[in-house]
Image 1: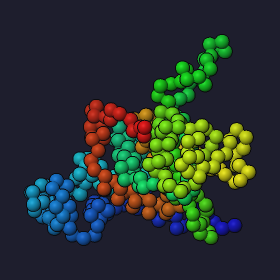
Image 2 (image 1 turned 60 degrees about the vertical axis):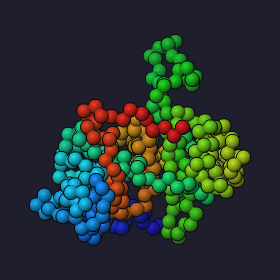
Image 3 (image 1 turned 90 degrees about the horizontal axis):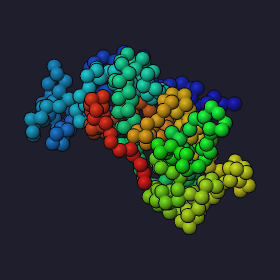
Length: 341
């Protein structure tokens, strides 16, 4: 039996120790190359002019030749206005990369040696970059769909006579949400690879219903694709638009014709482990970011950790400064959740 990829040396191309050992100059160069490449030209975040702007080596800053704006390597990015050394932010990305089931803000803070508030915001900035830079191109081929509910648990009363039927809509929590996932199956499988999904898109709905599922399928699934779903009536209208195949989970996990929606189920397996084992609680304001984080980890599950680190770092460098995470603990918080409907 061949060795699993994640146990091989090819999967371990970066360690947190290496990142913490970087000098300030090396960390600066690494993030600069992730943002602008290896050339001497950089882009001014104020006016957008690309060129060889005046560089101040003592302050590690540039002055724009066009508008005279002074900017640093993190200006205009998700890490703008940072107070910690840049090396700590790169180490945070490395720790985030290696946490295959997600990471709590408490553990994040202990690993980085910062207080909980700092770790909480930093982790969410990385999640925000993954959300902003995700590829929303339509899926094709065989697409697996499913939905799972979060934040809807109602603790039963101590006395049996005081308990209610938690299945009824009137007894449901108003904060209950559905995480809806669509996954594209890998079409070309190498001899030593494992079949699975190549791309995952997640959305947050108030409920698994026909209208929202139909709209999302129209927008994010190409015509001619094969859709695999379970017995929920939310997927009934898809038969008129796609080659839709169903499996009744109340009877079987795999239909007689081989139909499953196992790719969606495997996503929720990781998502639940992240929920129960790490985060414990998903706030609805940022539920879409948590769901997308699990999707990103699923899509990059067979990448070397060094490649994942570089990819996340480039996403952070390309993501503009988030208004939701500047002054978060001073009250500047997002007011509305990200609902796909």
